[in-house]
Image (cartoon, rainbow, N blue to C red; front, side, top):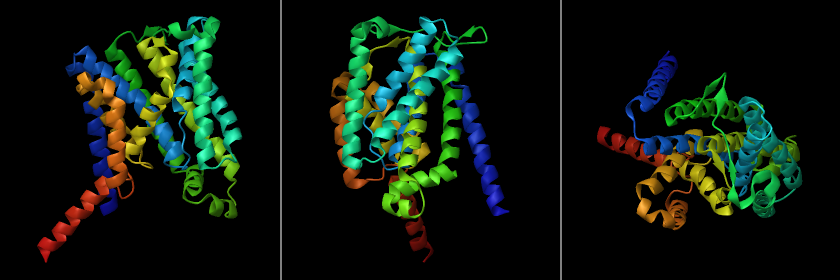
Length: 326
């Protein structure tokens, strides 16, 4: 009975939170603020997909910006040049990124931690160069102009309408990724993270689940990349560099690897802070690098990871309560 009441309380709090979030466009009229919020929601999906690879499977991937670019360019080109309906182009961007993620997973399935990192860095640079030099298709360094999402004759032409589009997309991706992490597949991913050799002896096909992990994560990264391109209405190779991949990687690390809510919290921090301190925007990589060094020293598991800052604070509070009772 006590567990049921706790679950009901959590569900009630979650419902109230979602209702409050839905009212944000009604009260926030500042276009710049809405733009930042939209970016937070889109990058949260990318951070969730990275956590699926790094946090739940223990594979270090520096190529996520490439998959965001693949999904974004594919969806924009299909919709703008070929006249394909938005929903097909949008899902197609995710599926195309998923296909390339599967191919990359096949190349990386027997690679160790260090070599896997080098492969993903090389893949990211290859994709950037293709986007920059395949001028007839991608527009080259000048970029590619995309259209806003259109569903059932309605165009998401404002920041307010895009807020609801991105919000629904984030909730959908969060629920699906959460169910994956709690499924048999998710347990196999965590076994790979904890000890690949032990996982293999336990009957888990390590190479197979590495490929699946890359494919699934790439789908969500591609979906988020497509959402970002259609929101900003522009795609450029300069948006998909190694630096961008590093920033994306830092989001789930800051929030806590293995924690889905932590991925969103880390994204909020690393998206909002550079916007608040715009005068220091050019030094954001220096700031983020220093932040990561501090985290690795004092909170290697991030804010919401296992034994992260949140757990340490809660343990301290319980300890203090125990001392007071004595």
